[in-house]
Length: 197
Image (cartoon, rainbow, N blue to C red; front, top):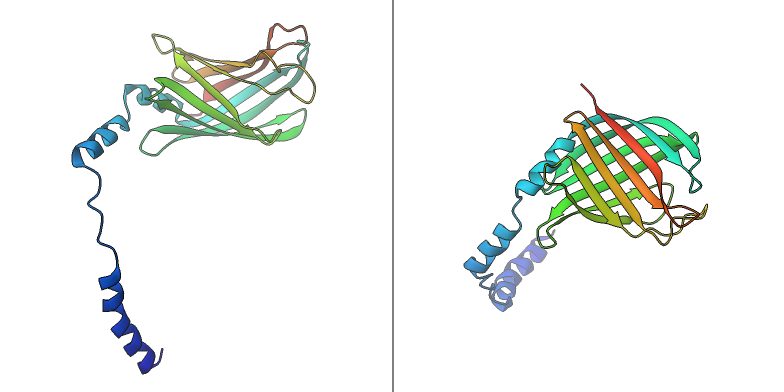
């Protein structure tokens, strides 16, 4: 930058600063405190810590007819995000010999007073949204959500029911229920998780 250019910039900066609007006063401190308190993690978020770590998985899948069509081993890595407010799971296995990868996010929404989850995978282009609660002891998490029609047919109207059952801190199973071809609920997938040592 030339000396003339520097001088011009030096002369312009005070004028620009003088023309800038005054800084806003910010949010009322009491309102900000209330907002921050309502966004703080709670005991409900502490339950997400049970998922943190690396897991060996065994996935089994069934067709809407109830016939088994896939069994495969896999892995899952779970970690907390944003100060423990959300849990992220990176999941990898195979479906009928083809690589399958999924990502899920789960948290506890204090406004809805419910756990909310999103599931995305590379066998589709949609996002599955689920919502639900743990039972009293905290051993079973049940989530519900709408399900679009699958390319192979079935499970369109009934929506998803996902049940995550914990046997102990190192073992749990996530079962997905959809609508069978006869309109009744049918288990379409189950993933058994064993914590790696």
